[in-house]
Structures are given as C-alpha cells and as structure tokens.
Image 1: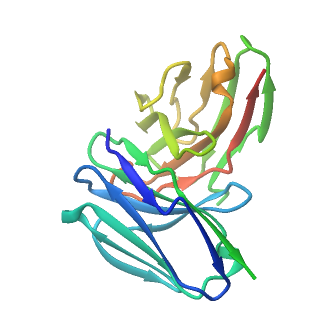
Image 2: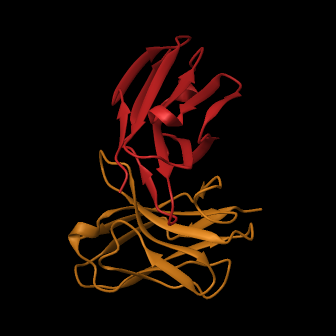
Length: 108
Length: 114
C-alpha cells in the first residue's frame, strides 16, 4: 500500500495563530483528501485536492503531486478548529490510505 | 438527506459473539466502505463496495464479512468477535468510486469486545 506520513503529530496553538500541517506520501496518487475529526469523533471532509491549491475560508490546501506532498494551512485559528486532521490518499483499485493524523489543540 | 447513518452507536460484545454493524446512505452513492480506527492510528480500510452485488477486501479484512444487496445498505458482520476487533468503526460513501470522489463518513460505531 501507500505510506502516508503526517507532521507534526501534535500541535498546540494560541487562538489567532496560523499553522501548517504536512502530508507526505510514498507513491503517485490520483486522490488526496483532508479530513477534520472533531472531538466528538465525526469526520468531515475539508478538501478534495489531488493537485493544485484550494481555499475555503480560513483553510487552504496545496498539493504538489510530483513531489508527493500536501500542505494544509489554517489561519487565525479558533478553538473550534481543535481535533485531529487526517490526510488520505488513493490511487487505483479503490483503496484509500490514511495518515496517522495531526492532533491540533487551540487554546483561548 | 440524512447522509450516512450507522447503528448502533455503541456495542459491547463477549469474545466469540457475532454481530452486524449497520450502515445506510440516502445519497444514491455507488461506492461504500468500512474502516476501523484504533488509538493513535489513522483509519484502515476493511472492505469496500463499488456497487450493489460487488464487494472487495481492503487492507485489514480478516474477521469481517460484508455484502451489498442494495445501493443504500452496506452491513459489516463480525462472525466471531475477538478482543483485537475492539475499535471504532466508520462507514463512508462517495458518488462513484472512492478515488476521484469526496468521501462522506458516518458518525461511527464504538465496539468493545471483552
């Protein structure tokens, strides 16, 4: 399968700070998604971004497929941003591989 | 739309018992899948289905069975539960194939096997 590494594993931020989360993957992919798992366990899709850059409010993501990494930017963080952020990738055969996540805590 | 629903939310089993985790979606999605999430780990794919009557194994299929008789439902069966199957189970669906499409997740089922 495809190896997916996320960094940092843990992150603590003051409210209002910015952060960058990284996802490295071991092989070429044609699907990459970022998810947020809130403290109640619900997984929410943030971005479908196999390549290029997307923005949604305070969040943006960039994937450089040729270099096998993706970045998730969080600006002006809020306490509601707390949770675990997962990167997941897929290639062919409908298999989908998740990283181990970045646990973000935003303190007021 | 209710999206992806899962039942039950919580379950405690004894070793050797069997049970079925239910998953349903009302978005007419062709692709459905089951994952398990263990502490400190990401989600791992158990089984998936690209349409009614078609299923295939994921990364960690042992100990689990699935079937897909309708587009809406994708149950996961544990035939003889083991403590190693203690986990949180998520069902997901997407429009047509898990590769090019955004996936939507259910709320999860927390399973404890004693």
